[in-house]
Length: 205
Image (cartoon, rainbow, N blue to C red):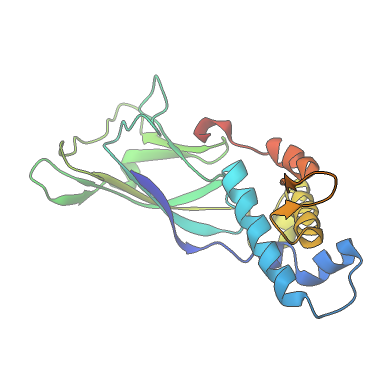
């Protein structure tokens, strides 16, 4: 079972442009623009990994071991919880049937919940998921679109602020350790992490 980014996503410099990061750090020179762009990407990837949310709109592919894969199954229902909120739409749900043939679930046979976090999908009332082949890996594949949008303003302000705080910390401390009275590993900015905790999707931690 796996969840992978299929297309889109990234564009962290749209969410936090280099100019915005430089203004936050009171940095006027252009010598470090390439480094700052790298730190923006790092902060964006960290924010997504930590919160389990999709910042810039993207298509993701979820592969599961059956429709009731315990990692994504919503207990007590036939629902499937889709990682990286917010959910926008589902492109396709495919499965390997008992004969080993790939089949597609008709869109009228399932319903979406795009308002919950994480987003969910389940059969329509009175319906059930088809029976996939057992003893086969990745028997169910769901392709879906998720993300806050394609502008900086669409991403929650505290996520953008957390990214800026982490960028500034990483820019100031270029090495993995800091020497002085003692030597210690440079941590993620704890205030930034606190901001992201409020946005974290705990179901998939």
